[in-house]
Image 1 (cartoon, rainbow over the protein chains, first blue to last red):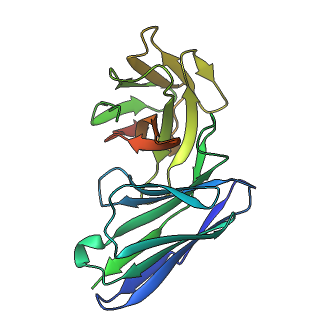
Image 2 (cartoon, helix red, strand yellow):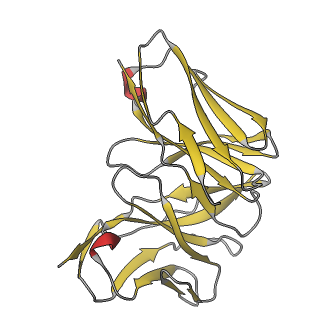
Amino acid sequence: DTEVTQTPKHLVMGMTNKKSLKCEQHMGHRAMYWYKQKAKKPPELMFVYSYEKLSINESVPSRFSPECPNSSLLNLHLHALQPEDSALYLCASSQTVIMNTEAFFGQGTRLTVV
Amino acid sequence: DAKTTQPTSMDCAEGRAANLPCNHSTISGNEYVYWYRQIHSQGPQYIIHGLKNNETNEMASLIITEDRKSSTLILPHATLRDTAVYYCIVRVAKGGSEKLVFGKGTKLTVNP
């Protein structure tokens, strides 16, 4: 099983709402990632978790709050977002962050902020 | 972060080999080159990766120059389903961790 599952697939939220994106993998991977992708642009890294600890935060605004409750789950909590935060949010996982292995990506959550 | 440069777009005839170039002249000695592709609005799909030796798998071949400043992804017999954006990526070390830094990608169109 090389699947990374993201839910929901689509999300529409108002600027005052609080919502969460969920990512799950059962490959025993210990590194998990959040990327943001705007239309016609490449994915941009937001966060890296290694062994359930945040190891990289690419200066992401605090209205995005990641959480890794266990080795299989990665959440992204959203609060007070702006319309420009509308994008495809991608989750990925890899065996670890320092090994020569590939990362597997989920299909993403398409977020629209209204 | 090591950056990659790729052509914006390329065309290839179905059944022919597609050769996608990538420049990564600032790559460090221990940084790997990865290739992913992304079909419209789906998650990126891993293709292949390498450090300095040429690599081949069931999807593609990766040719890395001896000075490691550039590489070429080869899809030996392109099909219509290979139409996608292809990303050449350098895996960058940062603070004991590593990250995949995506370049702008090449939009490959395979024509019948």
